[in-house]
Length: 237
Image: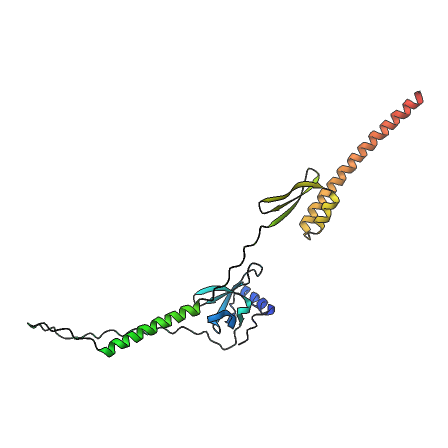
């Protein structure tokens, strides 16, 4: 049996088939353990970044996640094997006819030895078939994955005409908000390739330029007025 698992191209085809409402058929490889060679149906593809087992397969009544290496595309013409129901023990024969009453009680007739042996064999076979079906349906236990560490959050904010930056790791504060120059803030924002963010930053910078120009014009007018006053004072000296 091919144990190479599913390729990236086959997984992409599965994703398209699921989007179209179909459930691709797969066959378990040898790495799947006891259920190797069985047939299942892919019902979902989760995020491979969260777990190595991100291909959800319906097998019997269960829907379990597997790694792509545990699966391969089911060969054409292969039919899923159905569990064979365990034979039921034959009921004891019921004697029909009128009931006779006699004065002397009749001792019960012992059951035939051969009959008891057959019942034991049937019970043992039923227990064995049930245990094999449970083992085939339950995949091998997989080791628990280590718990990820606390996340790191870096925040760049703009308020009251100032840019600030802060950093947190989980609930721990690594750096309290401190002021950065607009040029440094614009370099950080340029790394974020999102039109909405860039548009908001452009609006902020346009408003700041307009305010700075207005303030500069006011200062120029005040400076011209002061220079004219100095010139008048110089003429009268």
